[in-house]
Image (tube, rainbow, N blue to C red; front, side, top):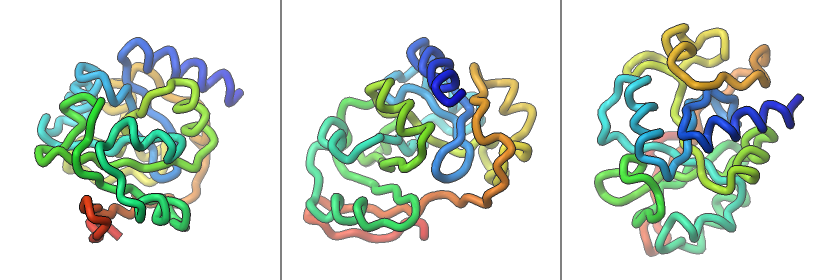
Length: 188
């Protein structure tokens, strides 16, 4: 069943669509992070400002160099030793849709440790966006059943995996990295 769900989601992503999918944190809205039109669809679904940046997901830290100009060595240590999901905000993003990147040129990247996400990204061979599955300004839904019908109706595909799971997952910790390796917490 996992393989079938990955295939369905893969088809939607390749066609520039938006998926509603489980992650290592909360349920997310995802699309091809290199496709500006697909990213714009998520902003429309969420009713959020087009200038708000996204978190992108990768399956391995070996792909960081494809999307960030300079990676401080400390980033690899932080990723390796993080006990909970960790998003790192890197300066100087590259090879991504313009509307994924923050106004200052930075991008938030999380290396996922979640079967569905990892396999999907490996197969897709590109990063996918991850933003909470809610209308902008509303609370982040902790479980699939809490996601609004409005959001569910607006996506191109709802992944049929972990929908009944009732583990209370939280959004990731977010740390901002400077080129020299200094870091600060944005969200703990």
